[in-house]
Image (cartoon, rainbow, N blue to C red; front, side, top):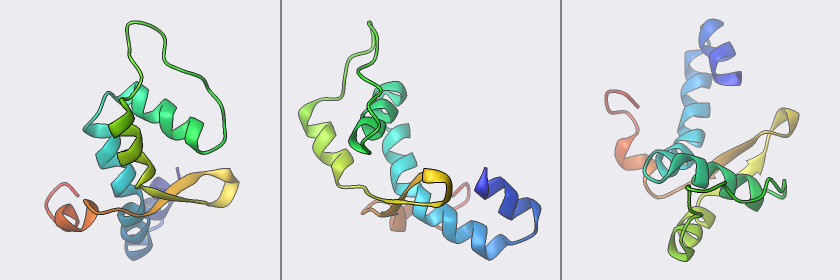
Length: 97
């Protein structure tokens, strides 16, 4: 919502910075089973939502370690957004990112 609001207000530089911070988590979510990845991230943030229902399987132990490598910080309204991650810089600035 904050990203949409920034773009709608024409605050493109601020929107770009927010997207840069969001990208590492999104890259993780998009490259794994989305439901399992988002639930695992939510659980790691301290908000217990439990496991996915069958047939969706939880993330593997190695995927959880990778997810933990995406650093998060609390933002306005309790939202969790990534601070950094290794894969964002290689994609940031390309078409679609």
